[in-house]
Length: 133
Image 1 (tube, rainbow, N blue to C red):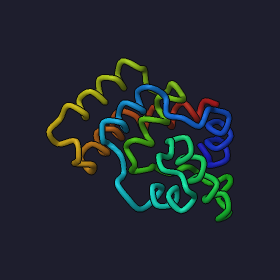
Image 2: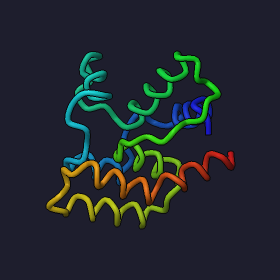
Image 3: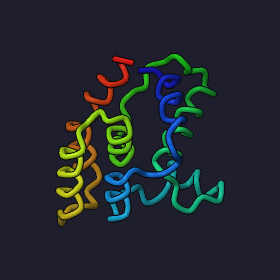
Image 4: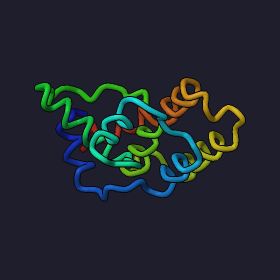
């Protein structure tokens, strides 16, 4: 699963959040500042999609000369949910259940804990999906 493969796949998709990812982000589970939020703000983008987030991340890595380097784990939970949903790496019922668990929790802002939970549910399946391509 290289940056090149990930970029090629997601660049073909619409620049929007699919429904489950959208539900997660609309309900407050998203990075508040810095990182992709800061970069989007500098470009005049108020609510960047996770597609935008991923494409810009991959393009930056490729500019660093990492075209064929392995895409390493990302700690951003909303990005992992997007990757899992948009690629169908994780079934919709599992993702919907995970998002419901997050947004109904009184700990929704505990990003470290939820990011780890999202990683546990999604990351290996995402890698498997892309390593099969």
